[in-house]
Amino acid sequence: MTSSNKVAIVTGSATGAGAAIAVALANKGYNVVINYTKSLKEAEETLAACAAAGVETLLFQGDVSKDQDCRDMAKAAMDKWGRLDALVNNAGRTKFVAHHDLDGLSAEDFQEIYAVNTIGPFQMSRAVAPYMRETGNGSIVMISSVAGTHGTGSSIAYVASKGGLNSMTKALARTLGPEIRVNAICPGFIETRWLLEGYGEDKYNAYKESLIKKVPLKKVAQPEDIAETAVWFVEGAAMITGETIILDGGMHLSR
Image 1 (cartoon, rainbow, N blue to C red):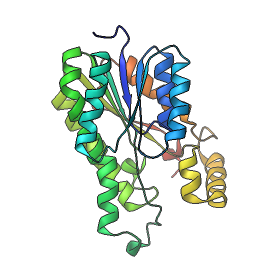
Image 2 (image 1 turned 135 degrees about the vertical axis):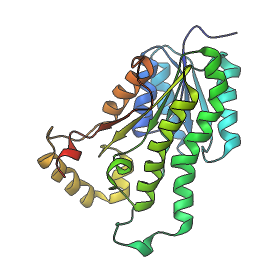
Image 3 (image 1 turned 120 degrees about the horizontal axis):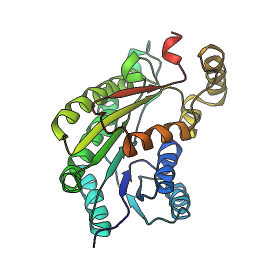
Image 4 (image 1 turned 90 degrees about the vertical axis):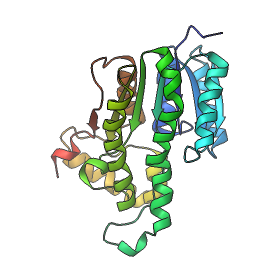
């Protein structure tokens, strides 16, 4: 049977922006696949928050860098609900290395970061494309970064992976239309555990405060800000595809 509710997959949705996106889509009536690799407890909390919105949910442990996991995730959604309407490619990986420390990154670092941040979204998009074409009005949203538009970020490997993701967004938009729209969101600093753990508390707080002082909107993004824009790309934006939208409080204007 095919669900009367629309269905969305959100990768990396145990915590942070991914969790906020999953909950926001659930509040819009979407049945949601909650994907995680290691954070089972947090994924279960996200699932409970989505279920509280009155929709059906599916918990799926899988690594988007593995093609079979991507195909299995898409198939699990189809087996349960018989349709796929939206994919939000949120899962991400980085290594925090100052850009001047060229010896701080290995080829393996690049390969591991690219595997999740660039190859993973491609594999997920490929996995869902046949099902979304059947539905006829699909939306794929890439959670990218201003790292990919401005060459700044947690490491040069991360910058490269997000730049590739932004270019791939355009290529997939050309390829998957007219049935599927493909767009990307490029956040700057998001107030999440991921950045806090990556930078360490002192550096994180100092960076956050410096941004608040200099960006035009005098604030940094919350996970819910990313979710709001992701939902808009999924639910609205009917004439927009191949677009990357910067969501950074105007940080890119203050450089």
